[in-house]
Image 1: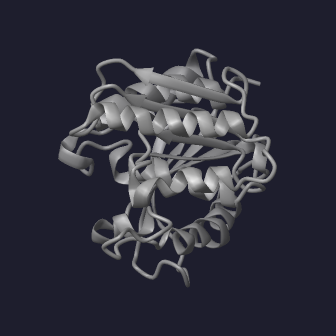
Image 2: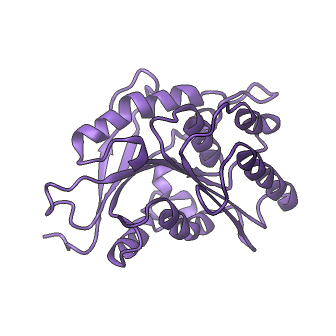
Amino acid sequence: MRDPLTGYIRLEQAPASRFSKEPRELAIYLPPGYDSHAQVRYSVLYLHDGQNLFDPATAFLGNAWGLNALADELIQDGRIEPLIIVGIYNAGEKRLAEYTHVRDRRGKGGRARAYGRFIVEDLKPFIDREFRTLPDCSNTGLGGSSLGGLVSLYLGLRYLRTFGKLIVMSPSVWWANRAILEDVHRVRRKSNQKIWLDIGTREGENPKACLDNVVALRNALVAKGWQLGNDLAFCRDQGAAHDEKAWGRRMREALQFLFPPA
């Protein structure tokens, strides 16, 4: 019998898709009480690089975010609403292509549009059908780190009516000559999305350039109408590197900002 005070992970196979033909695993966190409260529906957070979220055995270099234990703690303490977290495993060698929306000068990348259609047209309907979700935009989030942060913002801006909450951690703003900044500049009307944006001060071979890129992204969002402390949170994590440990730690504040208790 499961402990009612803790959530649990279900491993599932992603549905077949026209847009992502390779078999893909899902790691799905179901919150405490999910099985015993049959009438309750839950917000959903979709996260890229799903193998890094929960289990050290599948995580990059064995460093998982520890997201299941963190979510359990925050839910039990009443700091966030109970929610479902869907970890979408990356496609290995095809990760870079799926997590970038334009090709770089070497011709690499540029498959994020198809990856987004897989999530929106195939994966999300599957999750909404198989689990007790709150499927509307205001209760659906998307997030990731590094290239996963980049693709989260790109898809968030593309699917305004699907994802109302975005977690953009250490985004690879540098990709394709900072193309994501042009996407933000082209936004015609600000959405009602809430965005968590962050960066560590010791990321990459040139930490100052990484920091400056993300600050430029923050400023671009503010120029479009997002308000710091209201629907945009910006975290400059002093001394933090570009790694799973830092992202897992910052999820504590990100979840509280985006998924506060009702």
